[in-house]
Image (tube, rainbow, N blue to C red; front, side):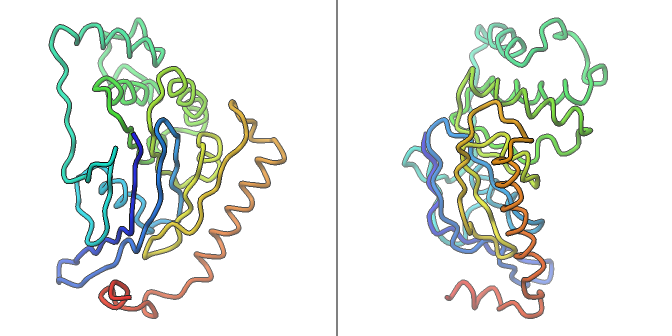
Length: 240
């Protein structure tokens, strides 16, 4: 299903009732079965945007649609009981955990627990898979392994994936396109097409150049941006 995000802005309020503009006029589309990543500096509204796409929050302004329908609430799907065992077996096999069906989470490694999370998400057959820093807590070796495994799973059973990460290298390794967000208030400044075939070699000079280009741009945005005291009030920005 295609995802449309049109002119989306979001204002949060502090405990004192002070407005904070988290997102400002965000626009992009995600095509059916596309792997689309969102990157940007801390505090730019990546997770807020994912919460809006999930229906956990509503935009202050603008509209988000899935398959032409406006997102108004979280979408839940129920699995008929006779199908449960078949689905469990299918997705356990898909993520490579056959033989571990009876293990408790404490008996699994971090990478295996992450694969369980992916299997659980896929088992309800979502039209869109929203992933917020899913590998952030893993050690570097396990993270790299999961970065290799996720595209294989996605290619065997395609879904529209929207993947939030702080890692430019991870986004380039996984994605068809990458939305680059600037500092708060978050907005999509540019969308990069990743034209390299899969699997991707991080030492490929073209991959290295793309990563360096995006990192340099973000560094300039973060360290060249104005301080919070210099930013216009949220109401002023929304009025613009």
